[in-house]
Image (cartoon, rainbow, N blue to C red; front, side, top):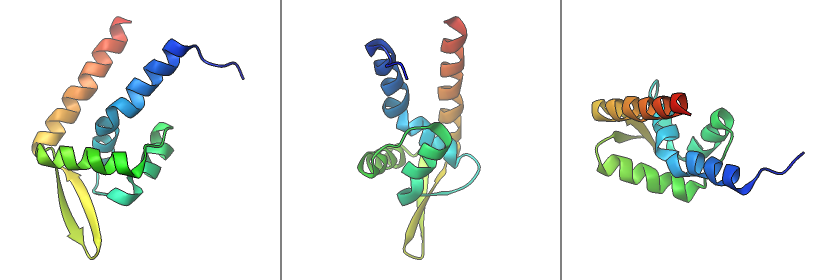
Length: 103
């Protein structure tokens, strides 16, 4: 398989690892998500796997901004989108769609 040029690699990294929040919130739009399983879910759906540490950091930030909320069910902590989070996700997706159409 042919190796990707450096600019393509940078773009891929920025669009994936640089936007873990977008992928995480996208998975939460229809149901709550267990934090520990989130990296595997991202890998399965979007084709890249962030570290658990990075995922927890992103979840912490999103919750601090009131874009997601959390609740324990037994020993597990689940996250879901808030109303504000749903609006943020729509806006993020809109930006990506708009930019891709202009290319």
